[in-house]
Every structure is written in C-alpha cells, then in structure tokens.
Image 1 (cartoon, rainbow, N blue to C red):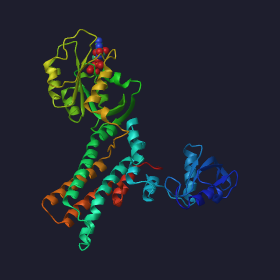
Image 2 (image 1 turned 90 degrees about the horizontal axis):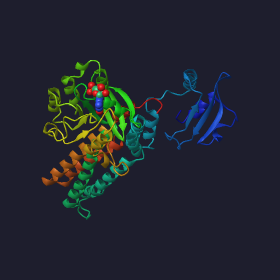
Image 3 (image 1 turned 30 degrees about the vertical axis):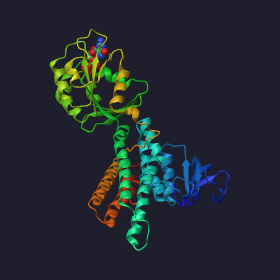
Image 4 (image 1 turned 180 degrees about the vertical axis):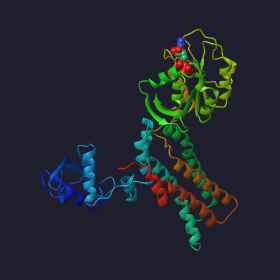
Length: 436
Ligand code: GDP
C-alpha cells in the first residue's frame, strides 16, 4: 500500500507482536505479527515499513508478506480495501514515483523493460536506463540548447540592453552539435531494437538439409534461454533464444518441427512468407549432395536478404563447397558445419555477431535507445533542428528561429516526461502489470 493514509489502513488489520504505535516505527524496518479480522487471525505476516519520502513512490508505504496462496492473499486484499484502501491501477506505484518527481518518465518506462526483459543484455540496458543514463544524455543536449536559447531570448525581449549579441555562428554551431548527438542516439535504436526484440531469424532449407538438427543444436546450447511466443502471423511460433549473448527471435520453429512428418508443409511458399519479415536468414544446404532445383529456388528467394549460408553434413563426402559461385552470389558468409556432430555451430554465432556489429554494442559506455516512443521523439527533434537550420539559411529573424529551437526542447522534454500529456502517461503506465 502506498499513500498518506496507508498506515491507518494497516493499523485496522495488523496486530504487531510488540504493540509499538505506528508513529514510533521507523522506515526500512519490518514487523512481525498477525492480520486479523474481528479478532480472528487471518495469517501470520511480516510487514515492511517505508516512511515518506524514503520509499518507491515517495509516499508512506507498507508491504505485507503473507504465506501466500490464493485464499489468504485475496482475504488480506479484501481487508485492505474494506478499511479504506483503493485497488491500484496497473503501474500505479511507478506512476506515483514519476508524478511525485522521484524518477522521470524514461526511468519509469525502463522499469517495464527490466520486468519484461527476455535476455540478460536487455535487462542490463533497462537497468542502465533506470539509473538515468539516457536521461542524463538528454539533459546534456537540452542544456546545450538552453545556453544559446537564453541569450536569444534576452536579445528578443530586451533589444535595448546591450547584451552580447548571439551570433548566427553560435546558433548554427549549437544546432550542428545537437544534430550529431541526436543522430547518434537515433542510430543506436537499430542496436536497441536487436537487444529488445532479438534478431528475427528464419532457418530455411529443403527437406532433409538439416534444419531441425541445426535448430536442436542451437536450442540445446548450455546457455540457451528459450521463451515461446505466439507468432505475429497466425499459426507461427516465435522462440526467443539467447545464445552466446546473441538474442535471436527464431520464427516458426514449430513449422520446422512439424514438417518432419509432412514434408510438403514447409515448401517454398511458406519460406517466402517467413523470409519476408526476417532480419536474418540462415539457409542450410546438404553439402553431401549436389545443389538441387529446390536449393536453387531457395537461393533465389533469399538473394536480397542478410543471409548466412550453412553447408551442412561436412562429416560426409562433400559435393559442394564454399567456392561455389551460385552460393557466393547470394552471400559471402558461408559456414561449414555438421549439425549432427554439433561442430561449426560457434562459427555461426561469430558470423551473426559480425553481420550485426554486436561486438560494437558496448553497453557500459554507449547510451542505447530501445523504445520506439523515444526513437520517434528523437526523429522529431532532428526534424526540428533541420527546420531551425533552414530558417537560419533563409535569414529569418531570431524570434522565428527561436520558435523552432523551442520545438527541439519540447520534443526532448516529451521523452523525459517534463511536458508530456496525460494521455501519453496513461498509455505508458497501462502497459505495466498490477502491483508494479
Ligand atoms: P530437416 O528436414 O531440414 O529438418 O532435416 P533434419 O534435421 O531432420 O535432418 C535430415 C536427416 O539428415 C536426418 O536423418 C539427420 O540425422 C541427418 N543429418 C542432419 N545433419 C547432419 C549432419 O551434419 N551429418 C550427417 N551425416 N547427417 C545429418
């Protein structure tokens, strides 16, 4: 419970073993006792106390730790509600932390990211954001704009004062610098998206090339963490796997598994559909046989995609190799493996890291944008910078230029939530689960 009166509600339902009055209880302590209703014990509990302003929401807060289980928890909740508490909306605790100024909107959003993280890397990015990494970066950029803006404003409002005139050179240097910083942030979104959503990957190949063997080799990696999702299109399943620190979102792995018995199921048409939305195609060929007509069709299908070509079954006598022009034409990433013996699998991971510059994502130093809302606002801010530059080129008066510069500040303020509207706040917090 959070709020000015939460201790009053607690007082009505909780009897601590040592009957210390609530005002003597210090924050960051726990008390042992019973939740009671009409003199009857409901459960034996521990209650943690947080006193304003030193709490998650900055309000008075308490947390009841009961034995758990549906019935008792529900009963305690009912008692709280009956004695004056209201049920929290999704994300309400974090929302209050934001509205009470303890964290900014960016940090609030990163709470969801941390909770929903599917990989260690994603959780790490979320934590960095929670620490205020991106907020600081945005604040720096804003300060740079403000320094110039203040002088422009003085110029406009008090032309009679002899303040040092802001030169066009100063303004355009500031705009250049701000633009390059924003573009760097914007670019980081590609990496951010990979961290958050994984590299959308499909494995294609004709029947018996070794798709399911490769899939098994990947999924059976010691450190593979697998989470299954409903795919975006009906009857596909997406699997989120982190192998060697690489987040992969494997599309329609179920299709590959099912196809074992019904070979025709995963024909060219289906591959065409699947490859369309993929960031990465892993095309697997049976190197112990000549390329078939179907292999050539697959090669044609993927020629414009980011592709890794796998020559499988290198434990058998080889009929095709990496110098084959028909393969090289499609991709220079050609890797020989034996899915059966699980050799060469590491090389695939190295190649993926190379193709997606994963080794360059240095989470300890770089600020990475992972949220589409932030990306859109940064795009918008870049547009405003460009517009401000245009107005300068057209030799517009400084009060017009100032309007566009204010737009940049507003776009940036929207990211951290200083000037954000209620609708946006509601939308952001509605993505939270209850009790967060
Ligand atoms: P899919 O139809 O593309 O999913 O292919 P599978 O993974 O089911 O493999 C087809 C057959 O090839 C199976 O009998 C596998 O045991 C065999 N196979 C797969 N990979 C290798 C390999 O690297 N070497 C050898 N010798 N056989 C393999």
